Image (cartoon, rainbow, N blue to C red):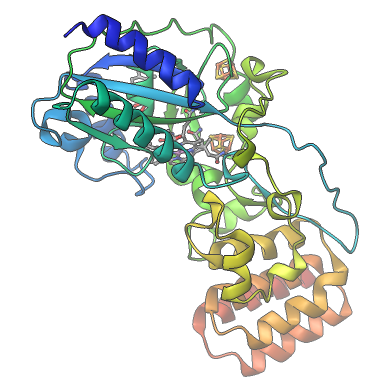
Length: 377
Ligand code: B12
Ligand code: SF4
Ligand code: SF4
């Protein structure tokens, strides 16, 4: 078998099916990554969304019989909406990060990898392949880095020279011995724009993230948002783009190569108030196709309440009071109590005093007290 020819055929085919960048890597263990993951675990810097078995994450031979190479792919996503709806007083909006625009990228990349698998099988019937996107054992970024897709930026993202860091990543382990590509040199140099811009100091140093402080992570948690982050998340409903938008490598980068990735403005930047009492069915219909809905509606609703507080949106007080009185979930009632206090006004104070008489949940009562404190300072 001429694997160099096959590699060229795969590259040509990948272009035909809308894979924007492809690279080939060895399937040797990821030793440096293993040390890094152990260190991150010791420091409790991990988000908890990663595959927990570090050996499986860093040794392809533990998840695939006799791996010989890994094919890495990247698809560029848009960074600007064609028409951005502007929020205003009375009609405030929240934001989903760019990686949650359009159809869920897991669906798009898995589909591309499946087509690639079929193509390879048509050329080499005995080929074995295992594809993954995000939820697999491997670190998509470490594979992409090794395969020369891009370098690992100080903001932790893989940055491609062609599409900046606005790329989704996926990969396929194979039993075919392709010639590996070479990793790229970092172009970060002395730049520290991402570190300086991070609102929570989650980037503890170039290329090292304390995920527990990262807004992208915090927007996905289901419990109360810790107090110290409530003024930091702004109107973000899901994810955070700050360390990418400030990156000079992303300047002028905005690729619209895939129709499915085009955002519906009303989903990517939805009005906040209607989210407060959205039903499960409506949520699924409106947000079910985007990657940012994977944790369900609760974190999005909690973040919408915090966003209304961020805007000090007085017109939202009646809706927030309704949430405080009627929502069955303590996290949502409690966050509403805090938001009501932060926004302020006579109606806000009386609603909190009233709720204090009837509320029985200790966590919500604490939030009511926090809300009332805004009136004494
Ligand atoms: C858990 C997770 C998160 C967590 C933690 C992120 C993190 N930085 O670790 C949270 C929820 C915070 C998150 C946020 C985001 N995520 Co995320 N996430 C993942 C997931 C599932 C695992 C990542 C992981 O294992 N991290 C642990 C760290 C330690 O390892 P790593 O980043 O994978 O690998 C690098 C480091 O280990 C580093 N490294 C290793 N050794 C050493 C040594 C030194 C000295 C240094 C400096 C570095 C270094 O090099 C590796 C290669 O870059 C991956 C999918 C996957 N299966 O890999 C997606 C993934 C990384 N996420 C992705 C995206 C798009 C995002 C967001 C941009 C979304 C958003 N807009 O909100 C943000 C970016 C936040 C940020 N600054 O990183 C993309 C990244 C695409 C790209 N171009 O890089 C991925 C690959 C999903 C995908 N398939 O496309 N994510
Ligand atoms: S995603 Fe936001 S919070 Fe997380 S490291 Fe980047 S700028 Fe900081
Ligand atoms: S902002 Fe600067 S340091 Fe951070 S990733 Fe981009 S180029 Fe690298």
